[in-house]
Length: 151
Image (cartoon, rainbow, N blue to C red):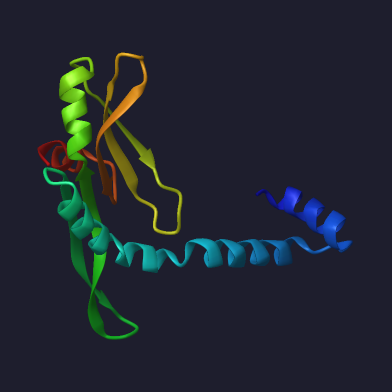
């Protein structure tokens, strides 16, 4: 919800006029309580990968991390590097019903961690987008596209 609408809602429901900074902090706290912290979400990716492999045989899930030295704590930590996943049902659906052409696209992720989402999609008989595979990487470059297409 944009801050302007949030401000109007607070003003009509609680008859209060809050400052923009306070509204921003309240919105961030609400999103944090609903979605949790970003760090916790990234930690759950390992569990998601295991569950995907267990429940969807034939699906692929590759999560790569890299070791980074933290100067504050003086210890080495694993940081998220790349992620590739594709569902077996999507691959089979593409082969059975979609047109024999694959489109590739990448878009920037505008969260605290940044990165790029790489996608491979097809077109189904209804002229709708049909997902085939997804990849997350730090930077969209020739090498990251090569990695995505090789996976």
